[in-house]
Length: 140
Image 1 (tube, rainbow, N blue to C red):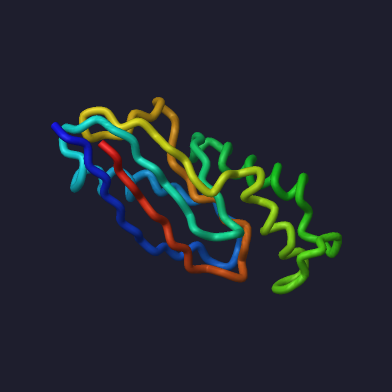
Image 2 (tube, rainbow, N blue to C red):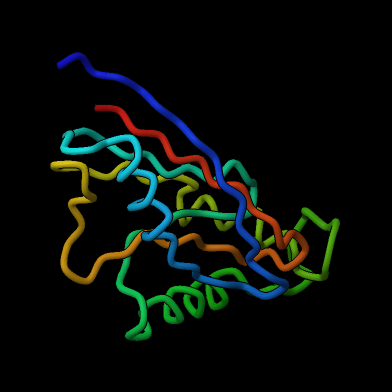
């Protein structure tokens, strides 16, 4: 079977506070449509200067712990040179340097090959931009 590349975007509302938002179901639904019984790679990309994608456990506190670590490392105060937006917004522009704006994940038999407790999570610390675009691309 020849390999193909397919891509789709979806928009999601993240709200006006920092959030670790599980988007695993969006990824799974997309793969059900484009990767039936196929092996390949899913790339998840957020084309924003203030958001990232992480693969981690959700619901047991790890998602909140990651946000707390980002707050500790990148305090939302006035130290940042990037100064437009809300006070401390410059730190949001540093987040993608620590939480990459993309993740590439294995797909086996049309399904994400994640570990038992792993989820695909959109990390957004920028309350100034509540609407996010996510691009899902399948190569397989």
